[in-house]
Image 1 (spheres, protein in one colour):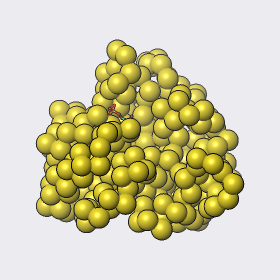
Image 2: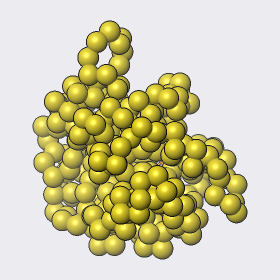
Image 3: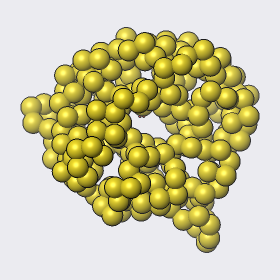
Length: 255
Ligand code: PGA
């Protein structure tokens, strides 16, 4: 499996409401992250805060919560991946369930983004995950989402990819949510690797990080990284609290 450092992605979603708050959050997070060696941290604020956040971070990397597949052109309201790259964004979250729910993101759009962004040298965090908790067998949708998202993505651009297994029912703000168990996360991670191996071969598949998302906290991160064998986490709510997020990244740097 990939021997890369754990990857912890802070998905701020549509928070905070002011630039001042965004800068305070970024600065506090950077102070903690700058002390840690064995972890890679990405901050993904709302687009409007990216240039300012970029100015106050050094060790943490710049991420965005989505990007459009074209570089420029008549696409009102879209944000070009090329423009993001030019602003210093290295990582892009693609296919988050909230984009599917509120922005009508389709499997085809996700696939276009995957192909364009990876070919353009961006690092992509592809979110996959089932809507309902099922238990027992790994839901087929995991395989379907992977195959669809990666259709036409060639082996030679795969090194920029990380997969976030994020069961939708485990996202903290969804009603009745609770984190997945490390055991189920582990089984799903193996399954994701099996599908990737079938598509690209074992060596390439092993090089892709598989990370976990869904109600990650300082209480649960260790188990996901050790028992769950996850190579990082996608953190929503807890990334808005620098103290809690600081604990998560510190634990990850020692796991
Ligand atoms: P959560 O969100 O950590 O608040 O559950 C994770 C995500 O949706 O990316």
